[in-house]
Amino acid sequence: MKHQSIPRVVGKWLIPPILLFALYVQFHGDFGPGGGFQAGVIFAAAVVLYALIFGLQAAKQIVKPRIIETLVALGVLLYAGTGLISLFLGYNFLDYTALDPDSAPHGQHLGIFLVELGVGITVAAVMIAIFFAFAGRRRLR
Amino acid sequence: MIDMHLPILLIVIPLVAAPLCVLLRQKTLVWAFTSLVCLAALCMASMLLIRVLEEGVVSYAIGGWIAPWGIEYRVDTINAFVLLLVSIIAAVLTFFALPSVADEISGKQHYLFYTAYLLCLTGLMGITITGDAFNVFVFLEISSLSSYTLIAMGRDRRALTASYQYLLMGTLGATFIVIGIGLMYMMTGTLNMFDLSQRLPAMFETRTAMVAFAFLTVGMLIKLAMFPLHMWLPNAYCYAPSVVTAFLAATATKVSIYVFLRFTFTVWGAEFVFEKLNLDVFLIPLSLIGIYVASLSAIYQTNIKRLLAYSSVAQIGYMMLGIGFVSLAGLTGGIVHLFNHALMKAALFLAVGCVVLRLGSSDLADWKGLGRRMPVTMAAFVLAGLSLIGVPLTVGFISKWYLILAALEAGWWPIALLALLSSLLAVVYMWRVVEVAYFQKADDDLNVKEAPLMMQISMWVLTGATVYFGIQTDLTVNVAQRAAGLLLGVMP
Image (cartoon, rainbow over all chains, first blue to last red; front, side, top):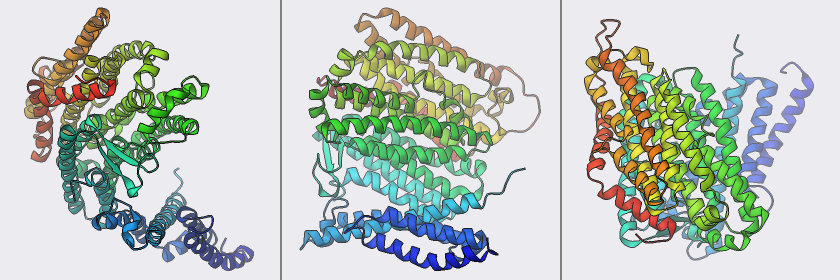
């Protein structure tokens, strides 16, 4: 679709707001609708749109498959790591109060923020990885 | 600290290790790390079982949210026993995995293999440890999705279709389970198993309860490969990599049987399931038919992995038969057989794995003269095979003894007779392999070596265990008896 000007121009206009909206859904998720899963999908959608317009190779140069794979792992580690931190601070696993024992609501808030960030990273990376895997498949003769 | 957080660490350590494997990437490093994690899990599971036997139920509130509002991990004798089984198998198999995976899976995918292996372990142990009905479903998906991946890594291209077939059936089963759990949640407003068991009796008369129970039970029976819902199993076991076959055969269906026990006896209660709905009227005949049909199918297989897979379906029949008796002896037999069969089937599949490494084939026709070429491996195969038949001094005898005892206790001597006669079918299919391996000459003069030491160790540890627990039955039978008592609400 590289040679068609309308998708290219519209894509260039749309991709940054989509990425921004993903971040909004991610970080505003604790006050409004949204959260890590939705944000991750929206973020991945921007990359998918880019790949559809400018081709798979161009997309793979921006988000390298190796980095995607690392991000899949890092998101899970961030989630589980948050739980383990509260464990080391003497609370139960995933008890976010541990993150700020003086003010439990603040601790809970911080905990949910970190966990959702982990979810967002992994979901976005997995979505992109699945898209790359399907788009990169050659037709069998 | 470790003592207090034991239930959660048992799940979180393999869970965290899985993404770390992706980051480590290097083949040997990833393998060493995986083995270490599996050994740690084994230590923790043993500590947990010892603690449960001493203190009774261990409960852990995740996130500090107390049950029934939060997710609770609840460990009693039954699931501590299953956790120990799963972690033993996972730990022993890691030694086998190094040479076997190097041979069967392309080098680029090794780290992904170990990641999926650890995730599957996490899922299986998570299903077992949790006291929350919805959490069971979540972990079920973790273990199922990773096992589809593991099966698809098989060398044969048919592994892909086998994995896909398993995916369809597994998803169907999981969907049924989640529909059942959803209906239970709708009726009671709770997901905690213990809380459900308190609130469900008031709803027993409603149609929703019946539908919930029906969905849940059929879903679980698909996952545990009960005849006639077992069609996904033979292909999945046949084409998966050797380590995966042994791992899944020894753990996946066993954990599903545990889920069945937990929901039927703890959540719904034996009275509702067996006295009001008379599930045993279906369970016992289906188990018996399953034993015979699957054993007869096993006799006609030309591939040894597939032969053993059909035999697994038959053995699941024995476990469900024991459960169907709804008596202390029957449940003890079922639970003991769950443990024993895991040991012997894993040992048998490992022996096949050793041969596959050297011959590249699990076709019966290629096994000619193997008794002379790989005597050590074949000896293990025969020993574990004797256990499958149920020869005295092996674990198979112990489980059959309790099952037949239970049948006689209930006054159902025809069932006892049928269960005994079915052992003869096991003799037939094991004999076919023995005959080819020991009494036929190899077609070629290739020089076939024994499998590497690492693989031999895993195989002989499990084969040794089938003999050891056949003679020293204190651990298995006592724990199974206590578990059975707990499920039935009576103390032995």
